[in-house]
Length: 123
Image (cartoon, rainbow, N blue to C red; front, side, top):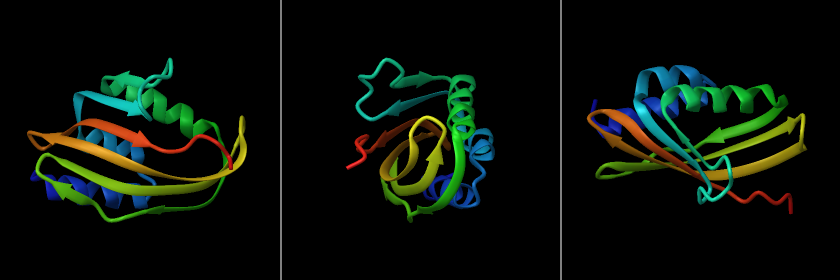
């Protein structure tokens, strides 16, 4: 799959809320996921099993989704980015609306790296 196809497919699956299917179809087994700058204790996740676990924990923390958005991908050689947003009520944080810039690296037709940039304060 070419990078534009990977990017479009990820957007399609995320818009449908099919995050686990995106992991199965589009990610390399040794993919790396970084939250923010990666300096937090749990900021770097390595390998698809660990990334799937992180995704399930995030989903299990959601009480209710009030809205969300997934922008169109911007592609530059081996990378693409997407703006995503969610307005949700979480078990541990209450209701919070946020937007993030999601950056992905693609090699050999698979996502090998993802990094999410967002503000963590509620103001």
